[in-house]
Length: 254
Image 1 (tube, rainbow, N blue to C red):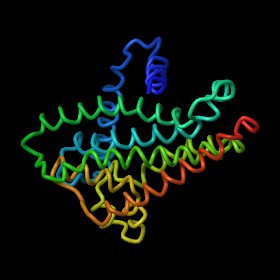
Image 2 (tube, rainbow, N blue to C red):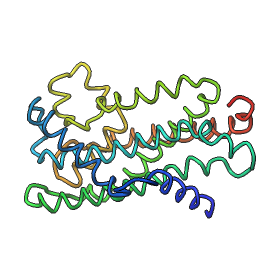
Image 3 (cartoon, one colour):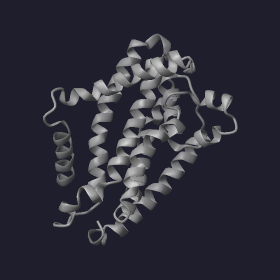
């Protein structure tokens, strides 16, 4: 536990060291992002938001996607980025990806606070319901999904560095296969032949369920939630198995 805490503190300090605004960037990034999304996708492209105020709609998707993508991309290079430390001293290797997830969770918590503030601003246009109680499960799913995928990719990047470059540009593109900037109902209505790709994306289920529970509008399905939970559990289990197998010999190839 102490080592995890030290790594989390290290990541937090090193990332914001020598910055003027420091942790204020936690707020600046999502605010600027939702303003751009609201202008480009809401005003110019005319993509609907299921009756949810634009800034609130985009913020709900953005904070979840940013957390997932950060967990995935940073965990995917954990062996390469920490080769010097991992090659000199032994400690449970899983501590590294866990510390990354926890440090990202701090930023998510701050941005989620911003989301709650925005809900208060638009209090007369939202209608929270009991699905809001599923929020801890949603957080577990999105965390486990990013962690599991990241650990699997990190195991492969010990031999094939090219994969790290693929991840760096593929993850932002994958955002368009989730419902960050558009509701699931729009995807199903306009592109029925391809909407299954978006519908069965586990991240889509998490985002849609969050919006439905906190804002009262969107898509919610117990079946899709169960599917996403099952897929995530399999991915996390495979990630742990592959990660533990590779960590024994990665020093010879990294």
